[in-house]
Length: 346
Image (cartoon, rainbow, N blue to C red; front, top):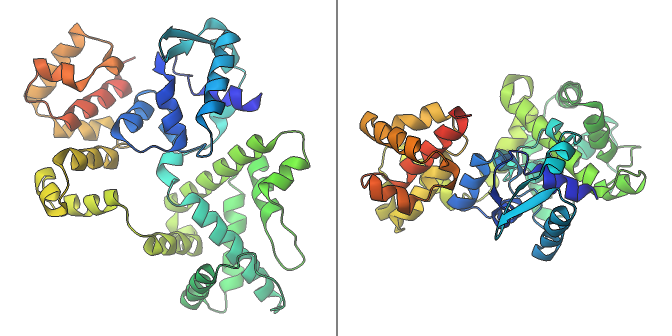
């Protein structure tokens, strides 16, 4: 079954992993322990990939992978790849997908729905045809689209918009191109949903879902990398971000960027310092470990280096244990050093 192959792939690091934490990662549970787990095992990009996956379904997949000798249960809830599982991993092609769910979790779906809607409106606009049924009947979304059109409208809008479409598609793999284009709706063009596309093929719904996600994430990455080349697409992203209500981590980020300490932010926001510390770690989750290590003093690095020589299984460390040997170690310093070891120790 395709989803079992995907779940097996998440163990590709070969580490001993707690499978219950993997479930929370795939469901999008945003806690420091879950996000750290994702980074340490190289699977943070799959955060919130399967938000509708039930615990019962997931456990059934894990049990089948164990019974079929692809995974081995080392201890309760701790599993690792078997030799058969490692061999199976080499035949899977999931590694070529450009999934970046942690980076784009807040924007990918909203961006795609807005892009579909705008593409429909501009398609009919290009043919001076106003007699059509909009694909989005939400009055708020319709107002947002009208406001965006007022901001960007001009004599070259139609040409520039579809030029950006053509350019960005040229960088996508053929399968991803076809999946995105097949969903477009316009004057004389009837788009298909992911479900409808899967029904026309023997590849299955999950295949189309993953390749659709991969295409959107790659598209977003291209726009962020070359913003001058995609000003209209970038304006859609910015418009969505501006209209979204900022979450608690975003509020913490703004205060930290102004130079306030973790303790000061906690006081200002009336939250526990441990909560702001969790935000601080999440904000820095994808930064290179070389940057993270600037938060540690030379003395602390030396102590942690010595500790890692005594206890090399750093992915299994617990802060409550390590801090007994290094009392001055903060929780974020502990996590940043783990990330550093993950990136530099082989």
